[in-house]
Length: 61
Ligand code: SF4
Image (cartoon, rainbow, N blue to C red; front, side):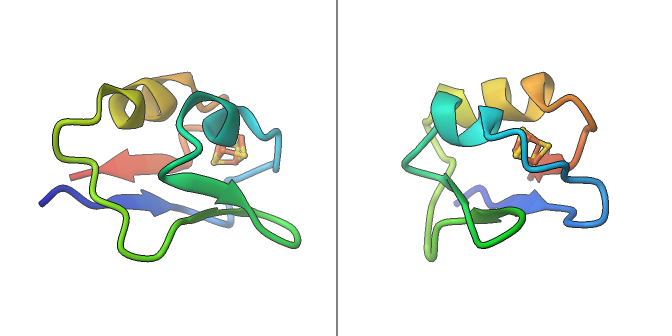
């Protein structure tokens, strides 16, 4: 299992991660959040979201 994390101090709520990978990232009330129990294993969009985030707030490990 690979987990995604969002650093909410860095997130600027641009919504890009949700557009790229909606099964893993959701925009919450203010900042992006990882969907409960979401697994990035085998999901290329996780990596894509990590690389696309303008503030590098996403980590996948
Ligand atoms: S792409 Fe990055 S800055 Fe934009 S909403 Fe997602 S975590 Fe936040």
